[in-house]
Image (cartoon, rainbow, N blue to C red; front, side, top):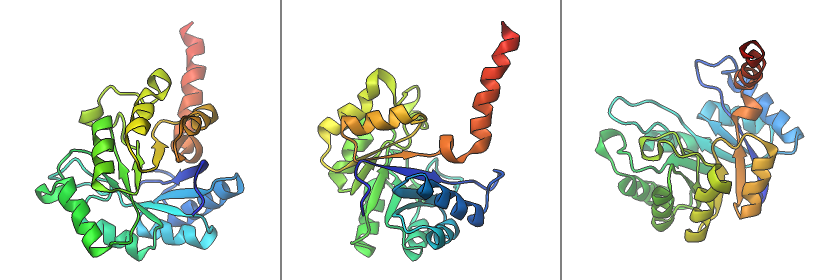
Length: 228
């Protein structure tokens, strides 16, 4: 699995988004591969199976699902893990924040259950701050990700690019396992920089694969004309 110093493109579209469709995500992954991507991050078994029909790149698999009793929604329970194992995702990413999972399950317990049932599965920790990344490394995750920085109550106000990616530099100085930079890395220059700092790989999503978000950025800038 050759993803070191490489770009991984997140090909996702949720049910309320215009491009929501396994077929479209399969084509999106093919476009990413043609552009030079070396890996794909994808949501749900259906999308992963379709993507596998289009590209032979390694896939980081997740399942996003909302639960009424938990803020955790990325691969929150064993049901989602089993779905991703069935889809033969190369790496399974799970929320590794300090938030409690559905049915009051803590991360340590959840990690142990996964490793007991699937000892050979590669796990990526989707973290939101320094402490969570260090803890995930101590638990034994195979990859440490910065996916949720700025998206949780634990990381409120944190911006991943602050002070030349200070958070990432601090994580790299402490953890042993490979760090995958992800979250608000929205320019080619930022993607290059996190790899220069020592990250194993970089995941880029919305700025490549969500045209409605890209369009909004252009419209927002254009609308400034009337504000002058």
